[in-house]
Image: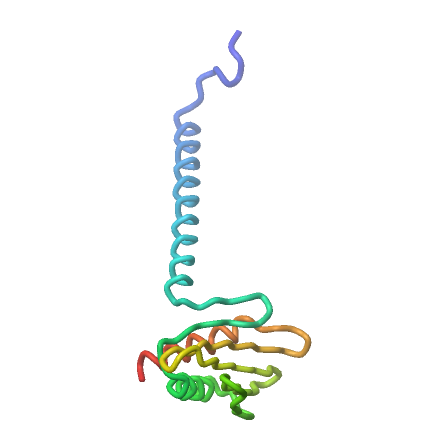
Length: 145
């Protein structure tokens, strides 16, 4: 006596199973490609992002150029610059956007290297996305002049 699995199945069911399996394989392959692409984009920008509302980037440019690009980026984003002060080998820029407080620190590593750290707070919480966007907009200004 044949079991149910050994019994002949209609061609329509076999075709449906084959299409389902092929579709799953294609979709899973797409996930891998997207993950690799996302990793590549993050790695190529050279921006480090943390969960505590900070984003980092080192520029091969003097601090004055990075500061000018940062101020332009903040202005383009509609963020009001509150203050800019020099403390030791760092330039600290504070800004405000609606209910967020932004602090951008430009650390002089050498005459031609500047490390940028952007931190955004929203009350008791941190906003990593805004910090990252400030760094990316500064980078864009550095590239476009």
